[in-house]
Image (tube, rainbow, N blue to C red; front, side, top):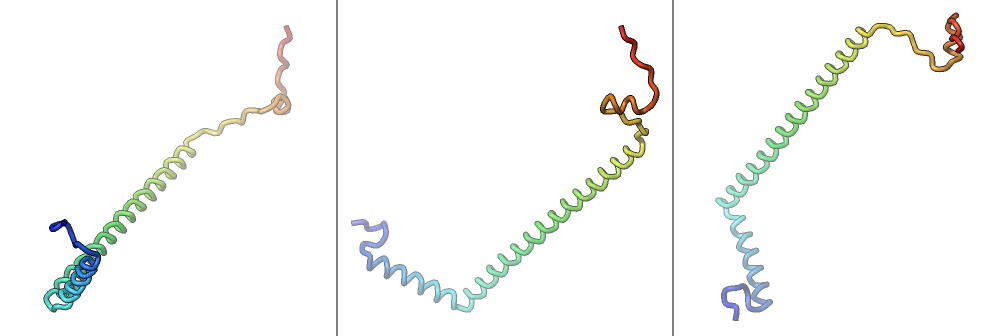
Length: 109
């Protein structure tokens, strides 16, 4: 038989499971265990809250940095647009080219 590898029968497995559950309930109801559980549980909650706060902080930092970059980009773009000289538009068709004034006819060869 399997002496060291778990229960021999299904009944023994159910019995062990029930015994373990009752043992956990008993230990959880003891005042000293309950306090330890409360402390551990509260510490986990606090750690979770701290993590959430840190994540929120770094997310807001990243958003602020991106907004600052966008503002700088817009300022640079406006400054560059202000420095560009006015350029006469290039005609797109031959008709537009002729309509813009008197220009000498090309020499026919």
